[in-house]
Length: 246
Image (cartoon, rainbow, N blue to C red; front, top):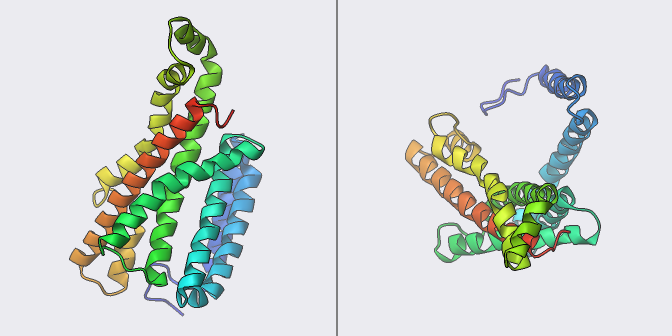
């Protein structure tokens, strides 16, 4: 049986998936990247989680309360995942702040302006995209900022000796490194349509929308994602400079 979707549902699909998982794990292991086991567990978790969501999604989108609860769960998982990439212990939960600071205002602007409806089938995927982008931006910015402060501790102390306040001294050192976390989103936005055709665009086309409608949807998603990630990185950098993660 073949599907009209982007992926053909053939009998060899499970074989192809297993081969890709093994390939990724082997490359990570043989190349001593330190993530061989993580590749396996991530793929298994992805399969299990997507299977659960596929079962629950019809019920979730039918109720506003259920949709709101689902978004809260996504937010909690994003905060936990980003936080543990930056630090350990209870301070990891500080990651919830930049993720909310990035996703919430952007989602509010889209909703209040009428750009998106508040139907579960719309708001859940949009919220998921924003939370996912803020997760990545927060974890990258936070990790790079913390590492930069540790490695360049002498320069921070030199700035303090020159009269800088602790926050200002830390920002001078860690801000450039943290700002690099925005580069992937910038590159994705700059090259859309030239290098990649993102999921929202392709999904709209497969769903029967016109190329113009698909292009508008994808533009909104990319611009919203860029704004959300910029906010998340700004707040993350500020929090690292204030010692929230150390």
